[in-house]
Amino acid sequence: MTDTTAAPLLEVSDLRVEFGDPRRGEVAAVLNGVGYSVRAGETLAVLGESGSGKSVTAQTVMGILDTPPGRITGGSVRFRGEELLGADPERRRLLRGESMAMIFQDALSALNPVYTVGAQIAEQFRFRRGMSKKDAMARATELLDLVRIPNAAQRVKEYPHQFSGGMRQRAMIAMSLALDPELLIADEPTTALDVTVQAEIMELLDELCRERTMGMILITHDLGVVAEVADRIAVMYAGRIVEETDAATLYAHPAHPYTRGLMASVPRLDGGGGQLDPIPGLPPSLSAIPPGCPFHPRCAHAEDRCRTEVPALRALVDPASAEGGHRAACHFAERFLPADAAPEEVLSR
Ligand code: SF4
Image 1 (cartoon, rainbow, N blue to C red):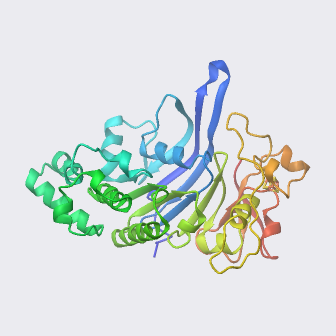
Image 2 (cartoon, helix red, strand yellow):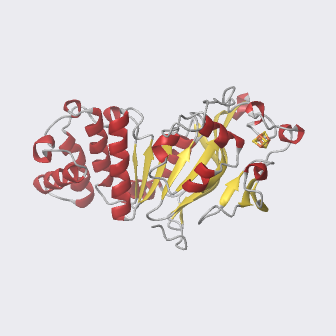
Image 3 (cartoon, rainbow, N blue to C red):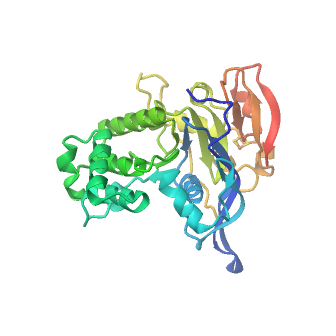
């Protein structure tokens, strides 16, 4: 259970990132004031379509955003209260692995094909902990065992191509845990895997995070993946958070039409929900985000105000939402909440 009174492990506020060349007038506003926080032991799922800014936010948090072409134009990323934007590169490098780690969608390209899996995990113990080769390989074997790779003592000597897709992802998880980070960012960790293996990997990540009281940011476009593991969910659209609340509330009564559209386009396992209803149109080009609410060209509820006025991300009075409240960036979010809900406070514009 997450301690909701504890200070956040990670706090991202008003983060702004652009790509392109302003001198030529070619600028894509990729992040437009993103803010979220994660506590120790908590899993925050960041949900959205491709190009919504989920991965760019994570890369900025990790300090691995390519600059150029990216440009951080504003905001703050604090880890345990320490500002990371503008911090010394050596400090950022030290924090990666030791305090925060990231696993990627494509484990095959993240692993080096010419070294054994064990050598790649052991490298961190050798260079960051000064261990002997033998001790480092023993720790690598323990980690493969921890992520439930059968016959870890043999597997540690094998190369990535000798592992199945699911085992490679387990090996990546082992590698990310090597230095006991407090925060794990998992960027679409199961997208390349079949459904059964996806469920096993998510279960493993969930267990490891809870056992180690580790915070996790789970980046995904797949609502099904987050249902079992997320404590809170932040939905992103066009480089903004458009809704954020605890997982149960989001599933019970999403308050933003985009989130509602995502829900309506996913089949339900219980067969309920009726006909699938995909969101019309496509996400906007980030170099030409529509004025007003960026979702208005695709929104069935859009009114005149939506075409000119950017909706603020507001805290809603939602009696059903548990800890952490319910926030949405829609002028008319209350229409989708229980009858006694009302706007409370403007958080950002
Ligand atoms: Fe739709 Fe308007 Fe709400 Fe945007 S502000 S999501 S266009 S109703």
